[in-house]
Length: 320
Image (cartoon, rainbow, N blue to C red; front, side, top):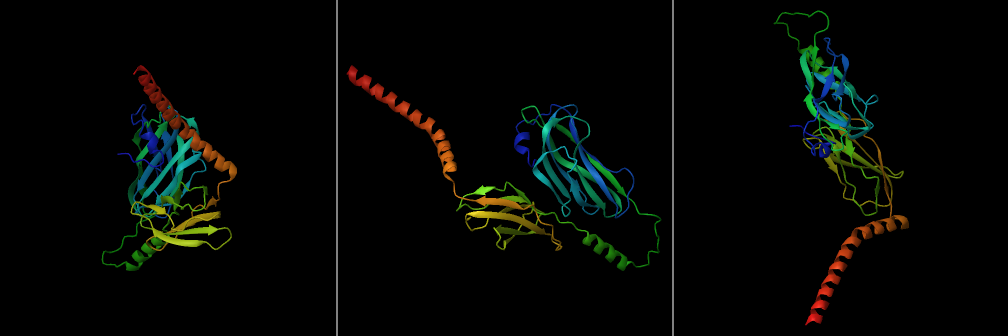
């Protein structure tokens, strides 16, 4: 079953496939060695259909591969309902993006990500779920196939064959320590951060981070020292940051970092600015006008009903 992230509400409206569009991966075909880095591209083939958005969940073996970074500089997307987010602990990369203009093509580049080979063997990087949204005015999901990229990691140079009785504890420990030192923890990803609040409102921010990570949130008012709040992300990586204190008038900046189970820390998340202020006269007038515009039809309907009932009673009294 396809799971949707940023575009699910649209895709679920029209689940029928009108074309055989596909999401696929462009991965290296030549054998690689442990420690090599390579780039995988996520592409879309729309089979001639114009599309406006896409999303995907990509799965990989965290024992064989390590995502180093995600590159969106050449992406066809102009906005990201779900910013690219990856977890090297769970072997997942998710994203959802919109295009500024509808596109059609066989090799539409959605994003690239750099991967490091961690161990020998043959492993796949696969698109586990995804959607391609047609620019048909109905939000039809036209994806019908999801690609798999197979990558082979081979020993570099000649294999050093030793007698089975020769112990190698030091080499094994060094290898494990080397892999541990390359662990990458993704910073928390905020969703639907309010830009403006009024005094007395509560700040509520939801988002995603590595599952089971220790998250440290920073809320800075003006030039004061930031206040810190610690919480844990859920098993699926989701979190809700909702401090008890009500917001006071001022300008705030909010950001966070994540700490993995091994103690590795991420970089800072994007810093978001939030302005807390009372409604001015113009804003209050606009809100009042909006409320009146919503209430007026209801009041008018009640008035018409009341007049109709009064008229009927009047007619009845005259006839009697």
